[in-house]
Image (cartoon, rainbow over all chains, first blue to last red; front, side):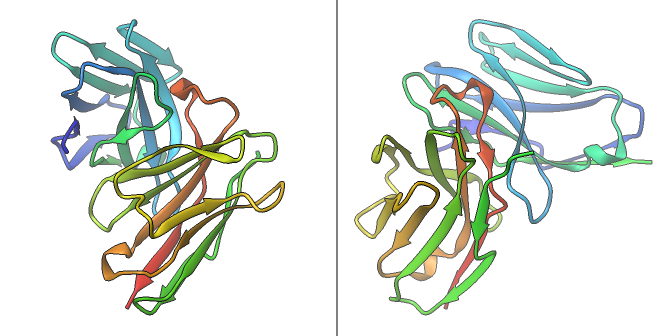
Length: 112
Length: 115
């Protein structure tokens, strides 16, 4: 079951530069997409979400873009900070449910 | 900031034994969830719970699993007869509303090791 895929297991970015994390999905019945951040020994922390009827949502340094035709979403972090170093999970919610289907995560390392 | 509390942080159990994982959700939240993450794999949905009943469950959540909200504060996951493949990090989560666009609050997890 690979409905949500994060094809890059890791990403390194210089402090101050933009981090772009990508996510692809296969199920057109997802109605919400979310990004979570996870530090070691902690649970996932909600970052930002986007409805399937939108193509962009912005919250401070974090912006999520949704391209429904390509079934692709991305998270942009700008400027990246060393404290952003964590594993980032993309998650999608099928319409009519309250559950999330998670991707496998991308480990972001922001270099000082 | 309110948080979801899970105990214990790590539990080791013999194969075939029953185990109960405990969670205290955020006090004014109404929806409760269990997820798990097998080492190196993705976070997987197990079950959602609302109004004292299961609202949704995954294929993983078979007859060996059960959930309960025994009082006004705790939310538990029971595995009746643990198998080696149940070894994973188990995350409890809660949310005020069932709509998923605001995200849940997850606990820090319980690492279950079945030997």
